[in-house]
Image (cartoon, rainbow, N blue to C red):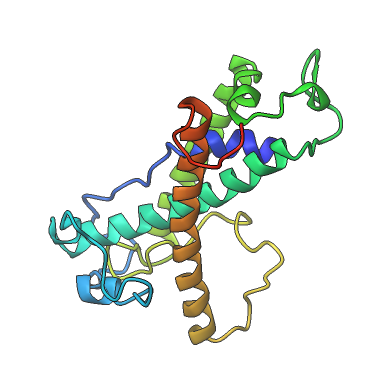
Length: 215
Protein backbone atom coordinates (compact mmCIF):
# COMPACT_ATOMS: atom_id res chain seq x y z
CA UNK A 1 0.00 0.00 0.00
CA UNK A 2 2.83 2.35 0.82
CA UNK A 3 4.28 1.68 -2.61
CA UNK A 4 1.00 2.58 -4.29
CA UNK A 5 0.56 5.82 -2.37
CA UNK A 6 4.15 6.98 -2.66
CA UNK A 7 4.44 6.05 -6.32
CA UNK A 8 1.23 7.87 -7.28
CA UNK A 9 2.67 11.07 -5.86
CA UNK A 10 6.09 10.60 -7.38
CA UNK A 11 4.73 10.34 -10.93
CA UNK A 12 4.66 14.15 -11.00
CA UNK A 13 8.27 14.49 -9.87
CA UNK A 14 10.88 15.54 -12.43
CA UNK A 15 14.63 15.62 -12.61
CA UNK A 16 16.58 18.74 -11.74
CA UNK A 17 18.67 20.42 -14.41
CA UNK A 18 22.16 21.78 -13.88
CA UNK A 19 22.83 25.04 -15.66
CA UNK A 20 26.08 26.27 -14.16
CA UNK A 21 28.98 24.30 -12.75
CA UNK A 22 31.98 26.08 -11.31
CA UNK A 23 35.37 25.23 -12.74
CA UNK A 24 36.45 24.56 -9.17
CA UNK A 25 33.83 21.85 -8.75
CA UNK A 26 34.87 18.24 -8.35
CA UNK A 27 32.64 17.34 -11.31
CA UNK A 28 34.51 16.11 -14.35
CA UNK A 29 34.28 18.64 -17.14
CA UNK A 30 34.03 16.02 -19.87
CA UNK A 31 31.79 16.71 -22.83
CA UNK A 32 28.20 15.52 -22.68
CA UNK A 33 27.22 12.41 -24.57
CA UNK A 34 26.13 13.26 -28.09
CA UNK A 35 22.53 12.86 -29.25
CA UNK A 36 23.54 9.93 -31.44
CA UNK A 37 25.17 8.18 -28.49
CA UNK A 38 22.08 8.69 -26.34
CA UNK A 39 19.58 7.60 -29.00
CA UNK A 40 21.44 4.48 -30.08
CA UNK A 41 20.10 2.74 -26.99
CA UNK A 42 17.80 1.03 -26.40
CA UNK A 43 17.33 -0.71 -29.75
CA UNK A 44 14.32 0.17 -31.89
CA UNK A 45 13.39 -3.36 -32.97
CA UNK A 46 9.70 -2.76 -32.18
CA UNK A 47 9.24 0.25 -34.49
CA UNK A 48 12.29 0.03 -36.72
CA UNK A 49 13.46 3.55 -35.85
CA UNK A 50 13.39 6.09 -33.05
CA UNK A 51 9.74 7.04 -32.47
CA UNK A 52 9.77 10.80 -32.17
CA UNK A 53 6.88 12.22 -34.26
CA UNK A 54 7.16 15.68 -32.66
CA UNK A 55 10.92 15.92 -33.16
CA UNK A 56 11.58 16.53 -29.48
CA UNK A 57 15.04 14.97 -29.74
CA UNK A 58 16.03 17.76 -32.10
CA UNK A 59 15.14 20.49 -29.63
CA UNK A 60 18.09 21.96 -27.78
CA UNK A 61 21.62 20.68 -27.32
CA UNK A 62 23.20 17.36 -26.40
CA UNK A 63 22.81 18.37 -22.77
CA UNK A 64 19.08 18.90 -23.29
CA UNK A 65 18.65 15.37 -24.64
CA UNK A 66 20.74 13.96 -21.78
CA UNK A 67 18.37 15.70 -19.37
CA UNK A 68 15.37 14.29 -21.27
CA UNK A 69 16.78 10.75 -21.04
CA UNK A 70 17.59 11.11 -17.33
CA UNK A 71 14.04 12.35 -16.65
CA UNK A 72 12.55 9.58 -18.80
CA UNK A 73 14.36 6.87 -16.86
CA UNK A 74 13.40 8.32 -13.49
CA UNK A 75 9.75 8.67 -14.46
CA UNK A 76 9.81 5.16 -15.87
CA UNK A 77 11.00 3.83 -12.52
CA UNK A 78 8.26 5.70 -10.73
CA UNK A 79 5.66 4.42 -13.19
CA UNK A 80 6.77 0.82 -12.72
CA UNK A 81 6.43 1.15 -8.94
CA UNK A 82 3.10 2.95 -9.35
CA UNK A 83 1.66 0.27 -11.61
CA UNK A 84 2.69 -2.55 -9.28
CA UNK A 85 1.38 -0.59 -6.29
CA UNK A 86 -1.97 0.09 -7.94
CA UNK A 87 -2.28 -3.60 -8.83
CA UNK A 88 -1.34 -4.68 -5.29
CA UNK A 89 -4.00 -2.45 -3.75
CA UNK A 90 -6.62 -3.69 -6.20
CA UNK A 91 -5.65 -7.29 -5.44
CA UNK A 92 -6.37 -6.72 -1.75
CA UNK A 93 -2.79 -6.83 -0.49
CA UNK A 94 -2.29 -4.76 2.67
CA UNK A 95 0.48 -4.02 5.13
CA UNK A 96 -0.15 -4.70 8.81
CA UNK A 97 -0.60 -1.87 11.29
CA UNK A 98 -1.78 1.70 10.93
CA UNK A 99 -1.31 4.15 8.08
CA UNK A 100 -2.20 7.02 10.40
CA UNK A 101 -3.79 7.49 13.80
CA UNK A 102 -7.20 5.90 13.62
CA UNK A 103 -6.65 4.57 10.08
CA UNK A 104 -5.25 1.09 9.58
CA UNK A 105 -4.05 -0.28 6.26
CA UNK A 106 -6.82 -2.85 6.15
CA UNK A 107 -9.37 -0.04 5.97
CA UNK A 108 -7.87 1.52 2.83
CA UNK A 109 -10.15 1.28 -0.25
CA UNK A 110 -9.14 -1.13 -3.02
CA UNK A 111 -9.29 1.43 -5.85
CA UNK A 112 -6.12 3.40 -6.50
CA UNK A 113 -7.39 6.98 -6.41
CA UNK A 114 -9.76 6.26 -3.54
CA UNK A 115 -6.82 4.85 -1.59
CA UNK A 116 -4.87 8.04 -2.26
CA UNK A 117 -7.79 10.21 -1.13
CA UNK A 118 -7.91 8.28 2.14
CA UNK A 119 -4.38 9.38 3.07
CA UNK A 120 -4.38 12.34 5.50
CA UNK A 121 -3.00 15.64 4.24
CA UNK A 122 0.11 15.50 6.41
CA UNK A 123 0.84 12.03 5.07
CA UNK A 124 0.77 13.38 1.53
CA UNK A 125 3.03 16.26 2.59
CA UNK A 126 5.56 13.79 4.01
CA UNK A 127 5.64 11.94 0.70
CA UNK A 128 6.23 15.18 -1.18
CA UNK A 129 9.09 16.10 1.15
CA UNK A 130 10.57 12.62 0.78
CA UNK A 131 10.42 12.87 -3.01
CA UNK A 132 12.13 16.27 -2.86
CA UNK A 133 14.93 14.89 -0.69
CA UNK A 134 15.53 12.08 -3.18
CA UNK A 135 15.68 14.54 -6.08
CA UNK A 136 18.03 16.92 -4.27
CA UNK A 137 20.31 14.14 -3.02
CA UNK A 138 20.55 12.57 -6.47
CA UNK A 139 21.61 15.85 -8.07
CA UNK A 140 23.98 16.66 -5.21
CA UNK A 141 25.86 13.39 -5.45
CA UNK A 142 25.87 13.54 -9.25
CA UNK A 143 27.76 16.81 -8.88
CA UNK A 144 30.07 15.73 -6.06
CA UNK A 145 30.74 12.00 -6.34
CA UNK A 146 30.66 11.31 -10.05
CA UNK A 147 30.38 12.70 -13.53
CA UNK A 148 27.10 14.54 -14.04
CA UNK A 149 24.82 13.10 -16.73
CA UNK A 150 24.89 16.45 -18.55
CA UNK A 151 28.70 16.49 -18.54
CA UNK A 152 29.63 13.05 -19.81
CA UNK A 153 28.04 10.82 -17.18
CA UNK A 154 25.39 8.16 -17.74
CA UNK A 155 21.78 9.47 -17.81
CA UNK A 156 19.56 7.62 -15.37
CA UNK A 157 22.35 6.49 -13.05
CA UNK A 158 21.13 6.61 -9.46
CA UNK A 159 23.41 8.42 -7.03
CA UNK A 160 21.31 8.25 -3.85
CA UNK A 161 23.17 5.99 -1.39
CA UNK A 162 21.22 2.84 -0.57
CA UNK A 163 18.22 3.67 -2.74
CA UNK A 164 19.06 1.38 -5.66
CA UNK A 165 20.57 -2.08 -5.42
CA UNK A 166 21.17 -2.06 -1.64
CA UNK A 167 22.22 -5.73 -1.85
CA UNK A 168 24.87 -4.93 -4.50
CA UNK A 169 23.45 -7.48 -6.94
CA UNK A 170 24.96 -5.58 -9.87
CA UNK A 171 28.45 -5.65 -8.37
CA UNK A 172 30.92 -7.52 -10.53
CA UNK A 173 28.73 -7.57 -13.63
CA UNK A 174 30.34 -6.57 -16.92
CA UNK A 175 29.56 -3.28 -18.59
CA UNK A 176 27.82 -5.14 -21.42
CA UNK A 177 25.45 -6.85 -18.97
CA UNK A 178 24.77 -3.59 -17.15
CA UNK A 179 24.08 -1.79 -20.45
CA UNK A 180 21.61 -4.52 -21.46
CA UNK A 181 19.87 -4.12 -18.13
CA UNK A 182 19.61 -0.35 -18.61
CA UNK A 183 18.03 -0.86 -22.04
CA UNK A 184 15.45 -3.23 -20.58
CA UNK A 185 14.72 -0.75 -17.81
CA UNK A 186 14.02 2.04 -20.29
CA UNK A 187 11.63 -0.12 -22.33
CA UNK A 188 9.83 -1.46 -19.26
CA UNK A 189 9.59 2.07 -17.89
CA UNK A 190 8.00 3.33 -21.10
CA UNK A 191 5.44 0.54 -21.01
CA UNK A 192 4.73 1.25 -17.34
CA UNK A 193 4.12 4.94 -18.07
CA UNK A 194 1.50 3.94 -20.63
CA UNK A 195 0.09 1.40 -18.16
CA UNK A 196 -0.28 3.78 -15.22
CA UNK A 197 -1.77 6.43 -17.51
CA UNK A 198 -4.31 3.84 -18.66
CA UNK A 199 -5.24 2.99 -15.07
CA UNK A 200 -5.67 6.65 -14.22
CA UNK A 201 -7.85 7.27 -17.28
CA UNK A 202 -9.94 4.19 -16.54
CA UNK A 203 -10.46 5.39 -12.96
CA UNK A 204 -11.50 8.92 -13.94
CA UNK A 205 -13.25 8.53 -17.32
CA UNK A 206 -15.76 5.70 -17.65
CA UNK A 207 -15.21 3.62 -20.75
CA UNK A 208 -11.97 5.36 -21.75
CA UNK A 209 -9.98 2.11 -21.65
CA UNK A 210 -11.71 -0.80 -23.42
CA UNK A 211 -12.04 -4.05 -21.44
CA UNK A 212 -10.53 -2.46 -18.34
CA UNK A 213 -12.52 -3.39 -15.18
CA UNK A 214 -13.15 -0.74 -12.49
CA UNK A 215 -9.89 0.16 -10.79
